Image (cartoon, rainbow, N blue to C red; front, side):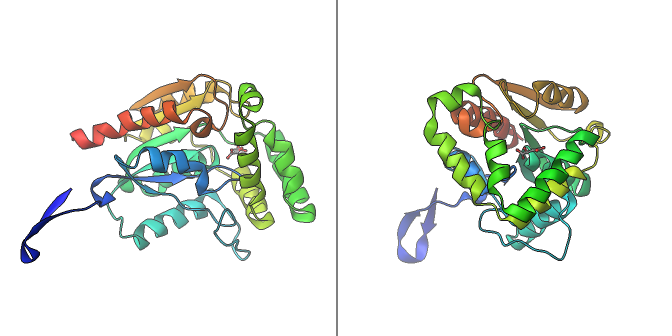
Length: 269
Ligand code: MLT
């Protein structure tokens, strides 16, 4: 961009991402906002990226007084947008647990949502068996630290092919997961355990939506993505080959292309 800097008598070129579509990137479990680095960099020309670390994750402090819920995480995101004066609607993008928070954000503040990106996530709640497994993992994290939970999860986060071909990504993901505090891990496990069933709300979410899912996701089956697309009034589905749960990292170019063409519609309006 350029501005006529009349007083100084020259045309000044500058960069200001304020004219780009604001995207709130909400990370998954047990991760942090660096998982969005390929999107923040690769989509910088079309997106103003706002990527919080949720409580107890990444560089955000853990808190103890309030039980973590997806509602609390969504309110934290809303407060961050207010703090940044991003009062207009934003595209809300969440991966996995971030998707659960994104759905909660839509429930609480639909007027603040320009568009919705749901990656590697689902609208269904935890089964009884899944709730029990959350409690067991929370006990382990509370009593022994995060390592055992991280080791148990790491083998399911990526597509089998990614483990074989991209050891650097495996290591990068491992260290990101290990950076989560025990308090953050326990809180997030309980928040996910108690999250509401969002399937009933999907027909009400009229904003444009993009659902992206890795075809080799070992944690959440593609059937969950397909079901969300059928229930949402205005959603498109992108199934990404050779990608597991961390679809945005494993196939970042395909992921970014899908997001780029989704964001274009907000420039046309
Ligand atoms: C995530 O990746 O955020 C979690 O694995 C989601 C979940 O456990 O339901």
